[in-house]
Image (cartoon, rainbow, N blue to C red):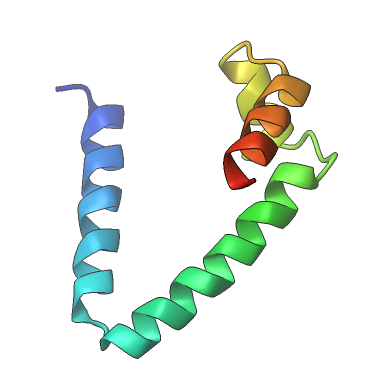
Length: 75
């Protein structure tokens, strides 16, 4: 396994363990905050590293198409 892959897996595992430690009401509050933050991230026009548009460019995805798919799924 590549070092990069190990770091991604370790971060994912750590996040899951931290979530499992929370009482359910705190986990729900955290999820709601994260949902709102993610909605803002998707709508952002920032192109800096880690932004929605940056990821779209990295994966060669059309940001408008991804946004449209997200919108259609929510309806």
